[in-house]
Length: 368
Image (cartoon, rainbow, N blue to C red):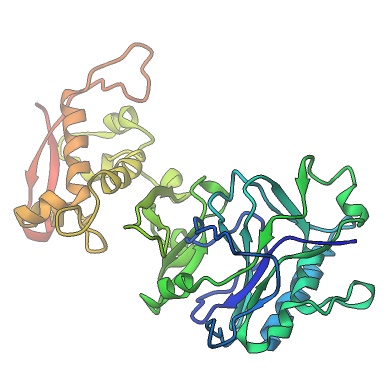
């Protein structure tokens, strides 16, 4: 027999980069949405005048279906798309896959169930399927208008009774629909790319950035990123997270204050003995103090120690790296030896003073 959960097909007009592989863990910044009492699993085409046509290319729609079908068939049992109620509250919407002008979005519309459905069934819901899995009740029949439809699945499929199917889950409860805020976020900066936070942070979502997922491929040590849920009925609250690149652990800085202290001689530049942990402190300062007119500098912040020394007072007060140098200076000046000589132990105290002129100024070590 055939039963339905819900699936939507929508435009992706300004997507910077396509999603390389579909995933049950991927969702847009509009994760928390509105649950509508009249939202059903029936086929709804976004046809004027009652709805807004989405102008998706039918070829892109069928491409998505073919891709998802092939992806699902890469395992013998068939890959599953899973939305647990706890991970998808408030009728959350997750991006399944995007191509060209269209993207398939899954919306979890039943908070009382955990949903898991075959990618093959999602594909059939989009294009009507092939062979014995054909259904005329498919999203592709909406043409360029786009639309939404409950995922059509075969409840007698052995995959749903196999030992590999998650216990307590059902193929029901999923819808696919429109997410214009996703394209709007990309449009704010035409050089931006959307990149997934991945499994390195529990703050799941997309970041929109010109550097995208390549940030850590350069000289960057870390950054503070913000996820904001888009199209919220009230003023959105950003969820900030700190991302540390691998280079923040492998650069040439001392591993800790104890090791830095051992490197100091008279005249040593303070910038050369700032420990690796300072990257985390730098990003934490961004989180605690924010950005904007009253927060810390963002984008135009200063790292070079001479530039930090020479900056105007107002700039110094808003530049995180100035505080990094202050904390490091004070720790070497007032730190104490500790039993067992851990990484926080300071065995020789050092003061630092400005040495040099102009762009060659440093904070040089001297005996206190």
